[in-house]
Amino acid sequence: MEIHNPSLYQAFSQVLSPFPPGVLVRLANQEIAVVTRRTSIPKAPRVRAIISAKGSPYHGSFLRDCTLPEFRILYIEQMKQAPALNSLLLWGTA
Image 1: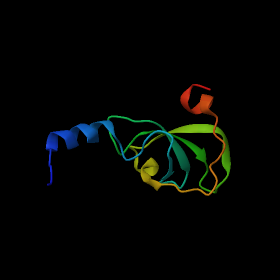
Image 2: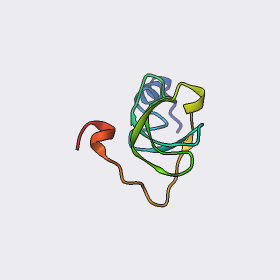
Image 3: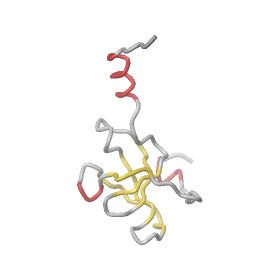
């Protein structure tokens, strides 16, 4: 039996996003960023760049606007070893 409920699907899609907080993403400018917050635009969450386009970790992080073409998200980044993240700088809590 197949159940199809459009209103349930719509409710889930409003709550969930393709890029949940904490996931690493590759930006169009080739930086790696961490998603820090969902926004009203599911494909443009709030992110902070933590690794440069050349692969060097930043000392700190930089807020990027994913609605701008140069900072749009290309894909979720798969890394063999996750970088050390300072939660206080990224999310404001330790």
